[in-house]
Image: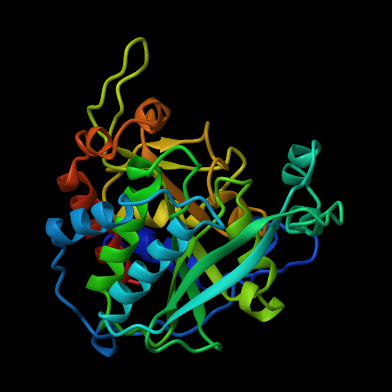
Length: 339
């Protein structure tokens, strides 16, 4: 075995055997590593990667037919469309509805709190002012087993009130859905996959905060990592006086010693730039608060693309590079298949 291969395997199996603790939001270096027998590739079901650009574009266009602010009819229409599409791949799809409350003027104090319970409390002020009922979409791999470790792939599908949200974040949802389509027959005796399409990300990551707050200690402990996708596929987009949008990159929290990103980038020969400046701007924050290794994928300089989010849907669609999203999906599928 070459030194390179050995290092890759060591990184990966260190990842999947990490045991997570919820008390005190401990760091990765505090988590014990267990030893288990390595399963041979022959015991896993291999499926052919067949990413289709038409499928990706179809999902983007379907979502962009309506504004998807949480609690609105547009959100519910989009949720129904996504449910039907994912069910057509043979998945069971669950809706998770939850109330979003006005968190008041001190909301950023709660969101940036180091106390886990404070962060995951959607109504820390005991407000009676509901802003609406949001809807998460949760899809589990067909051989889901609560005794196994779980990898999450997530994206938010909600928008603010002034946009149909092509870039933010129909593009990310299209990737998660296409990855799910490609992995519909994939089985792994050690690892579950959960595809989480969150709502209310635009209001302080409420969807992912609520979802994770509802998991049992065992379910949280079994999460080996999360891949979050938000605003991809605008590479090359230019806007006056701003930096040009670049290729998809890995975004991490500054303090992360991230075994998941190490394993991913090692597999793809450091293909993806690592950015430690913008971690926590999406639902990656919720997973990271629990000490879960999390990769947040977004375009380099994605903020530039947000400048046309209130333009017409056609204008928002023009910069989309479906081939970039397709190539990214192929990498994620390959990574998951090699687990």
